[in-house]
Length: 179
Image (tube, rainbow, N blue to C red):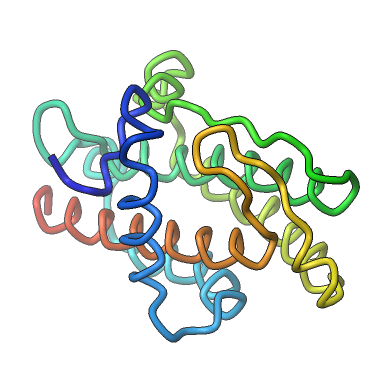
């Protein structure tokens, strides 16, 4: 199993390894630059693919590009909530979520890739406006993640940028498998 799988049942156990691997994907890049570039990169990653190919999983039991796009849209909404909690409250609890249950119970297999990408872009623009106005003190504010402990807003910026990089790589891999 990949370190990036991070199943909810083992989230607390695997959290440190998962976080380190995701942060590695950002390396020395500026997180805000990665976050700003992702919508464009997503458009480029899916250009020329038919609706059929966007909905085709890379293999049995794996996600399609459409499902990844829906995951990114939902994850961006989760990030929006966490950012706002951290900025507006003192040491708020940040709940985790099981991405596989979301994918199943929210019917990601029926996701419209265009709608998912549009939702991602709208929420991302809003999130960027919020974090770009944050002061250095704001970036040091923390929430307490139920599985990972204290996380500052600055840390979450890097983590979200790594999450983008992870899923862009996944989309490239799926594209090669289905095209």
